[in-house]
Amino acid sequence: MILEIRAVPPFHKNGFVVGCERTRQAVVIDPGDEIDDVLAVIRRLDVHVVSILLTHAHIDHITGVAAAKEALGAPVHLHRDDLPLYEHVVEQGAMFGVAVQPQPPVDVFYDTAPLCFGDYEVRVHHTPGHCPGGVCLRVGRKGEPGAHLFVGDTLFAGSIGRTDLPGGDYDVLMRSITEVILLLGDEATVHPGHGADTTVGRERRTNPFLLEYLAMRRTKPS
Ligand SMILES: [Zn+2]
Ligand SMILES: [Zn+2]
Image 1 (tube, helix red, strand yellow):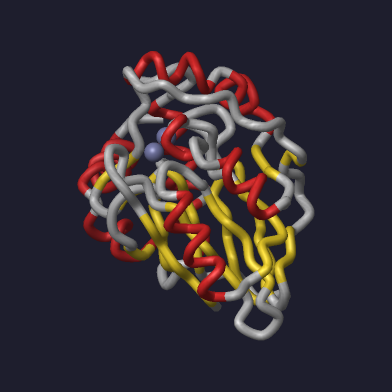
Image 2 (image 1 turned 180 degrees about the vertical axis):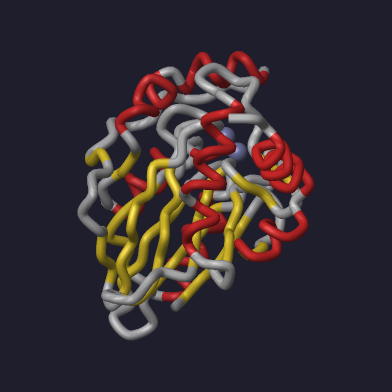
């Protein structure tokens, strides 16, 4: 599998190019302010991008969608529950004090069917809590359990997503992490929307927010 990651200030949000080494088909995940670097990677790798995939619609994850769609001509995919956020990207920018252009319309809402690029497929797991339409994009070879999880801002190495933005919900987030992501295999690599990669197993064993939540759940009388 081809995997390239780029991030730039001010948000240091990871933008990903994930490709099939045999067919040169690829997807772009969360094009943001680093889109020029991502497009340079795509040209250097000589891959053909078939889909633009969004983990969620917070501003830092979508500011490069217009440039990506114009350069690549690929459809934009989002979870339906994040459409209000997506359509209010200009207002999101105002909240953070940055000027943002509206982005092009979403082409496809995720459903249960896997998305394919070359010999690989993407399975979409709804993981709300950081925002209503957050997803975990699980990537692997066709027919195999995917071992690469693109989790957006749901889970980070040693931390969890914030839940204080509109539509955020701590209990929902913790259920998404413990009842969806933690079940996808300790060996799976987690690619968060910000910062370094980690694994499901490492977060299960060492993430202080998960340890506290799981301990609290064990001791809570039911
Ligand atoms: Zn976010
Ligand atoms: Zn983010």
